[in-house]
Length: 181
Image (cartoon, rainbow, N blue to C red; front, side, top):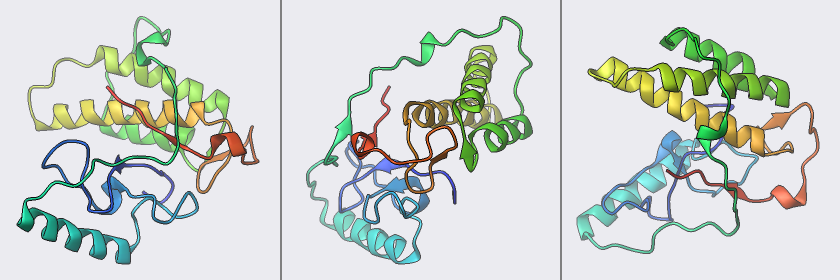
């Protein structure tokens, strides 16, 4: 989590846009600290938001769904990527190695594109999940694709997101990238 920013968008009470679903800690993206602080990864933030979630669930009241001050509208289909016909079925270790090598601390278009192509091929090659490990791997491949595609779209460096081919930040990218399905 130390080099991957983002997470589930929540409001100031830890609520997501799915009624009754809350998130805090490393899974949440509160925006409290901005891009130079890892998303919801501080101990203080985890304590505060978990307490707020407890209060909110006890009351049972619903507040407003989370909103972003500025969200870049990006229409990008994950299915647009051309992939090789024959690919090995992914493993957890292969997934981890790919993300570390191509989507890790220092990123660039070439590595991100390679990772995106491999992840797209892996996603197409995975059989329907039938148990917990296969379901987890399927979810990891999807999450890896989303992280990779968002990093590829953001043509700048900001906070812990560093692109060696775009080392400066850009005012046009002072926004969230929200990927939906």
